Image 1 (cartoon, rainbow, N blue to C red):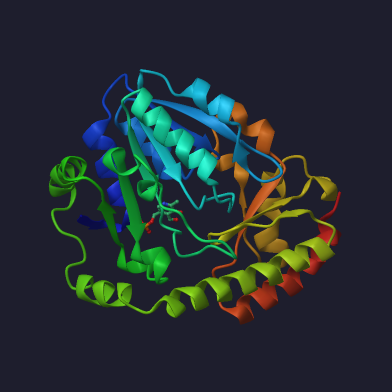
Image 2 (cartoon, rainbow, N blue to C red):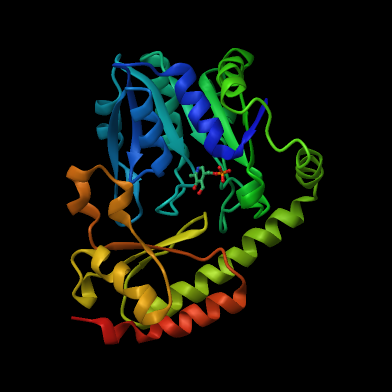
Length: 300
Ligand SMILES: Cc1ncc(COP(=O)(O)O)c(C=O)c1O
């Protein structure tokens, strides 16, 4: 294991350790933005497999077509930011099979591992043949809401973790040493701590989703993470960016258009989707839910 400056540094170190100029990396799309930045920094090619509505799952045939002998790494983010989806064992097993067939590494970003709603998280490294090619990334920021502490970690086979550690050594050398004992203690909290945390997030998610739906906006209810996705086309916005620009000023609520998490040439496919975060105190979400009832006034 190597402790890093948040999951962000673990992602950076893993990509810089194993991906070089001309290599190809496959991610699902939409994707967490730091993957694109780091793949770019490594001078590699970023190929995507789109997650498809209504449940943001990949088409396995398209996944098989995207991974080739040129693929050096498959980046998996499960549970998935920004869509809130959780991938089934069929997807995870396909990724493992492809990694073996094409001799590539799986980088599994599982920072939302404890934040699933009504289903258990399955680390890809625990499935048959999954461990030997997988670097798994976790974060105290997500598991304990200590985002500002920036303590993350990567686990996996020694050979892969040595590569991550070697790069990390020249990025930051050490990470949050004063915080590490507290995180270690937090990790030994009983299961019911994590269950209650997920239950409280599921509750705030429900409050936000209900209010959006009551305003006539379809919501893709997430299976995990901090985020839910809403389709604002019925308010007359084909490009959710226009509404995202209005929301802070008009309703005092902020949301992020899904199109920022995709390749520029693929924006059209997700253009009417907005991502809302519900990782806030219940009182804040209740206020936001109340304000969002004013969304109909922004219809056009
Ligand atoms: C999918 C995903 N990976 C990694 C990170 C970064 O985590 P950290 O704050 O531990 O650097 C985030 C933060 O939003 C995230 O959503």
